[in-house]
Image (cartoon, rainbow, N blue to C red):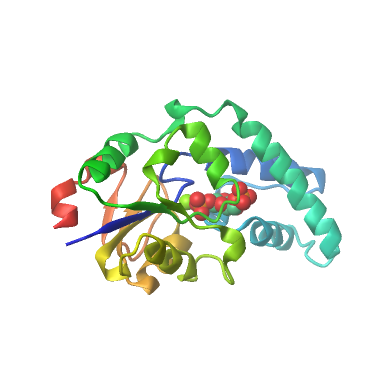
Length: 215
Ligand code: B16
Ligand code: MG
């Protein structure tokens, strides 16, 4: 019997990846690095600073910036990202998510968010789904980002369930790897990307038989 759910945000609750991509693409282009959608897949689920490091390495510029300059670049990207989020509404919640969260509420299954995004509380508020989550893990409290299992273990603790009693929902390979290491039953949300190692793969949450999942 499953007793708790842990959700990733970007790519599971809403498609904010398109805004991350736009903001990174503009930032990268300002320093003469051209990003493409294939490379962008590698940034999913990865923290802001780790994403910047990957982009600089991709452009062969990883040795060119000091820590302060990198922090400046990351802040610049985030300001653009947050500006792009300003028009987000409940219409942007991915198909099947609201009805799934409603079923969890009816079944008294606590839900938590395990997102690498420091903007998660703001995004959940804009999407008007924050009431469904009893806990949002603060990424600032983590020693390591995904694929390390730490964020998922913290989320399970916060909703007082064991990882083996929990279901995790992820769209990124780093997240699926972290959930499996933590010992969760793992649902992978696929779009066009391959996801290896998930226990169940769906395109959207309304493809899931809710009672079969929890029993
Ligand atoms: P921020 P998730 C992740 O969200 C994104 O997939 C990733 O692309 C982004 O770099 C990361 O959040 C950090 O986001 O810059 O807003 O702190 O998939 O873990 O919900
Ligand atoms: Mg994600």
